[in-house]
Length: 139
Image 1 (cartoon, one colour):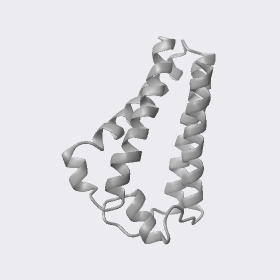
Image 2: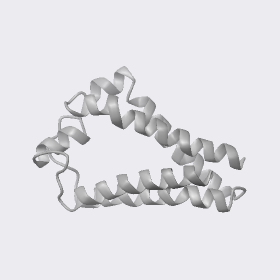
Image 3: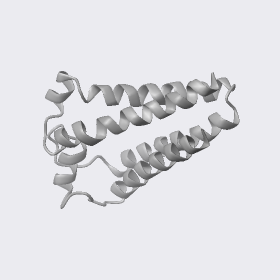
Image 4: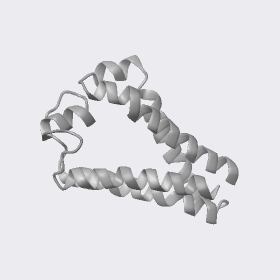
């Protein structure tokens, strides 16, 4: 399962780096901040969250990026298990939400709605599945 830990860590670290980039004012993959907000938030706003919010998300993602290695090193540790269960649940709920009619109605701004259906929600489900696989091995 070392390969899975490495893949999960790489994915979470890449997503964290993207949030840091946005916090520093980067606009990729858009042409301007309004387009970026429409692409990654999807609720109609045209401004990105403040930098501290982007950095906060990045920090949480980096904690989750380190978790697979903690799980492999200490599979019987209750705090490690709790963090893993919480992280897997968050990503599972977020991924599942992207397919619900209520979510689709609230976050209908394009291109977010399309990207959410094709990338964001499936990615969250894949990450949740990977976290759950590590949890299952440790339990």
